[in-house]
Length: 230
Image (cartoon, rainbow, N blue to C red):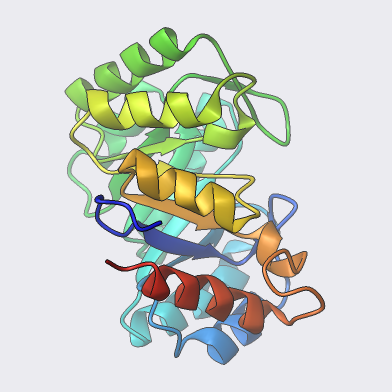
């Protein structure tokens, strides 16, 4: 059932089990014809030197590039922000928010989408009540975050309600990140009015096309989003 909300942007993550895959460049080259603008990967799995050609290939294909930092310390967050700047990423997603990271990025061309709420463990878990997370999201927006990376399905409560309330309380783009492995969840994201969502592991785990390649799984989601249009 098509939603009255604008179709959310899919951000394809070349990551599996929270790590960038070693053949990220090859997978991107095979799949870049897909009409998806946003592509990214995580700050772990490849060295900065290995990341360079992947970012270059994405830019050459006129994609918007996203680096997601899942490390939780201030030091790792700052390092990730430095990496995003050095490699020319468009968006830095994630990091537990620290003013030092926001301050560092203030005069840089990288847009910053930190995690709202209390994030811990690996893979990440999102803690707190919906009200606490919504209030933190509003604080981050006030601080000047360009968007927010919400770990909707890593929340141990009513995930759909959390996402809808964060979207309603803020004006910046909200990205629902992590554990989206079914069309039902994509529909939930769409219904919430969120700006976008990431998928990584589910493409590798063949959640959308059983036994299908990474490329076939990406196309399946891309086509499904096209078909749901009003």
